[in-house]
Length: 172
Image (cartoon, rainbow, N blue to C red; front, side, top):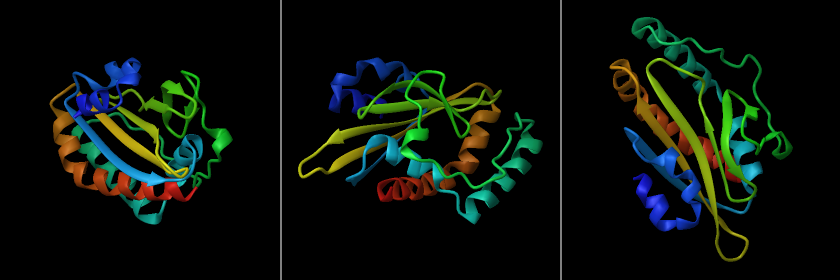
């Protein structure tokens, strides 16, 4: 699946390490007229009650599987375009930027875990009439037997959450 991006958008060879050798690659697309940083800000600001509930359920899985416990936000995030860092090492929400290029792509990693490592990224492709195609990419590399167990339990919710976040992103 990661090879789809590299074949379709070969100008982004520098992100190849984030897409290859992974145990799971998910790519979703959505069209909109916003710019990349506003799209990401809109996605990361999407925090309805049911996502808060899913994070509470995650805390139960963390205890059962012995995973690393991460802090969850206490305030509802409200990011603006200017809040999105494009320099490696920059932080937004619980993500740390690893590779980014203004108005082209943005990739960040999740906090260190003992069960899996994950990257979240967005690539934007210019279309006609100021319309843009956003590729929302999630990659996962399992580190321990608990990685696939955990991810297979949350996978259905992952698809729903990313879809809803992407819809919020294009509204930004």
